[in-house]
Length: 248
Ligand code: ADP
Ligand code: MG
Image (cartoon, rainbow, N blue to C red):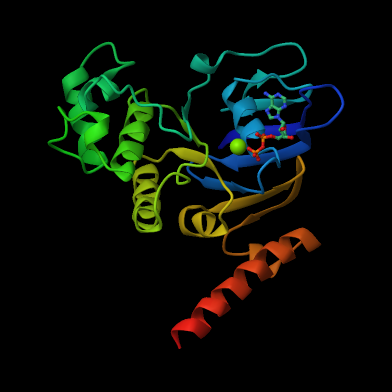
């Protein structure tokens, strides 16, 4: 089953320049897809369109087979079964971990919070405040708060950009495990190809609002479809080689 279908989606904020241009792809339920591109390439725009925070100029979006955005209708974010985790976590500083996670819940709060703390391996942190947590813990609580509402599609905007590299490596694996464990689908944005390789099943390369390539992670480097993607990969290779030369 397809969790997400996007056809000829375009978005311009000013009516002149396209932030996203004629974008089409679909995502199978249970898969994780990374969207990689430089700053300004349209990554956040794509995610905001999927979540319903923005209205497309043309094209359509279907979630679980149901049209949620097209020329004449837009279903609001809270009715889309999607969960959005923002770049800066946006936890409520004056609320405890438990209160943050339970924020949108109506009943069975304690029970659900306990399950989620177990899932993110933070049992015992119920009464801590965000300021008492590490960056990685804050990020996990932000994800738990979103998961509390049981979305079918999780959307993460640059989830690792505020973390140091040790934490990042650890969290990458954890997020993949969490998402796979509950059989959810996820799209996450990054400007770091290594994030994509570590976490996802599929990858989309964006440049100046246009999709350069959409491939599975296992195949993308054997089937490079543009000069730009070739450049991204060769930059990464030459950096890796420089590091290897230094340690040898
Ligand atoms: P990314 O997340 O890849 O950095 P964005 O989707 O934020 O890229 O931005 C894509 C383009 O759209 C950029 O040129 C940016 O300046 C423009 N843009 C993004 N948000 C807005 C907005 N709210 N109003 C006007 N222009 C915007
Ligand atoms: Mg962005």
